[in-house]
Structures are given as structure tokens and as C-alpha cells.
Length: 221
Image (cartoon, rainbow, N blue to C red):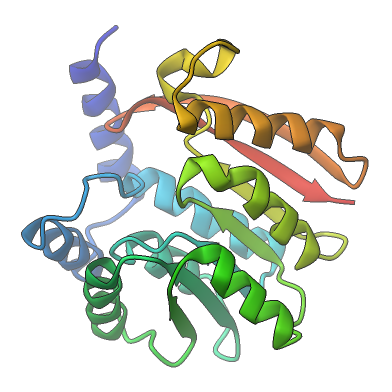
């Protein structure tokens, strides 16, 4: 088993189940041309987020961590015409690329991109008394994952789905002595989810074009 094989299987799944989409392809190309980190979700992972949001019947989605807007497009396409997705991005360059990608996808009317540190933006959403969200995707800086979870629960209601990405860290997640802040943030995220009686959750390991990683999926009771 190796990265070449994992990538080939991902490509097979994508070709079989995710028809070529010019808008998504252009978003990937724009992100690469702008020099954004190559950390977007893979197409089959984006499709999974899309399907989970549709299964939930989501009308309001919160995304913490926009990058270039690739996952934003997948999630926003799961919404009804009157739906709303709020996505939070700290980096002005990333936000500019994402805004262009979202506009090209024809989703500007239902996507509200907030620029600034996510914890600051979340506090603003609270002051605005935003209604609960049906689906929340945590995919920003991992050291702050425990704080993002607190806000996710704050903005949830029974039935809200919370997905946290990149929790396996190439297997480093099982080492309590690993001093990588992203590993520690992910461990604290999982510990908090497991200890919270309001949440029912599981986590899955994944391999594919993005390497060895995984995600945690929680349902608000």
C-alpha cells in the first residue's frame, strides 16, 4: 500500500462517481495558480460533505476555514435557493481567491464570506444573534479546534451535524507526547467531543490523494 495506489483509487472513485465539473475544476486551478496550500478536500471528500448536508436537509451551513472556496462550493450547492452558508477565512489572499471562485460558481447570493480570525468572526456572529446552523464544517487552524467546537455547539441545535477534518495527522493522533500543535489541537477536539453528553460521534481514518488522514463526525442530540 502506498501513496501512488491511494491516489489512483481516489481518481477511480472520482471518475466513476463525480462527473467532471468545470466550476470545481476552475476553482482548483485558480487555487493552484494563486499559490494556495494544496490542502483542499479531494473531490470525493467534497462530494461526501455535499451529500451529508443534503441528507441532513441543511438550510444553514457554517464553514470555519474557507481557503480558496472549493469545499464552500460543494457545501453551498447542497443548500436550497433560500439557504445560507457563512464561511470564515483569516487570510485576505485566500479570501480574495475564494470570493472569485464563489462568484464564478454563481453562489454569491447564498454565501457570506467573513474575513478575519475565525474566533473574532464567531464572536461577531454571536453578537448578531445568528440562528443555529444545520451543518458545521471545522477545517481551519487545528490548534484552535477545541475553541471552534465550543462555538459549533453554541451555534447548533438538536440534529446539527458537525464535521471536523484532518484528525488523524498521518497517525500522530495516537501519540499524547507529540508536541505538534495541530496534533494536540486535534486530540483535544476528540477528547472534548467524547466527553460532551450533547454529542454522539465517531471518527474515520481515510487514505487517498491527500494521504493518510481522517475526520470526526458528530451529531448534536
